[in-house]
Image 1: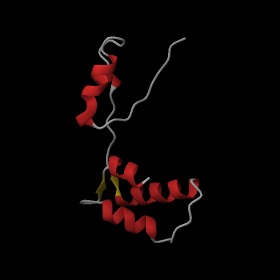
Image 2: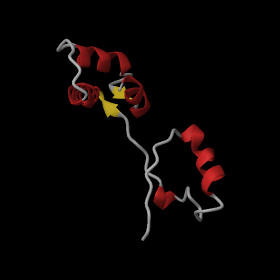
Image 3: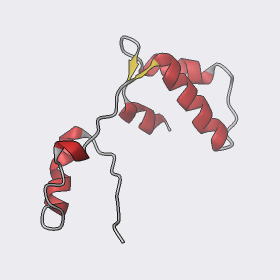
Length: 87
């Protein structure tokens, strides 16, 4: 039975995938096997922060997700890696 894996990794660490899988998987970094995460806008980031906190059962001030998203945003763009750290 075939097995599939999904890795989320920063582009500056892509070389690690090659180091680990080159001898087991043909061309693990082929273009048709890679997907780039796009940046979130501030509203999307706010929703993600709120949903993540609620799913974890965390209580917070209602304005906290908006404040965090605003702090992370640069020109209304929030990097997925920064949301990961906040999460």
